[in-house]
Image (cartoon, rainbow, N blue to C red):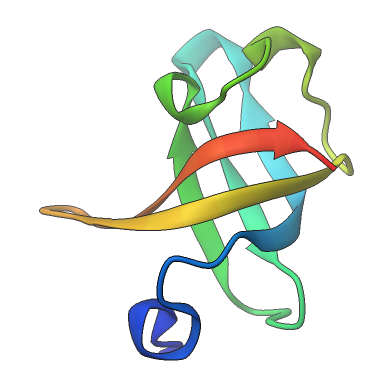
Length: 78
């Protein structure tokens, strides 16, 4: 399992929206350079319009450790 905090600290990461479920208000982003590492995100973690995001969009984000695991936050289109 990839250790975000140890490797990146508070650095802005890059990735691609892999899956987005508008009706459930969440999706998954693939971390650049980590093909098998997808991170959950909720619409509240998107700084821009959630509905404007599409699968395949390049984004920048940060990782937050929650009680449910890692979550992408501060998401913006790259």
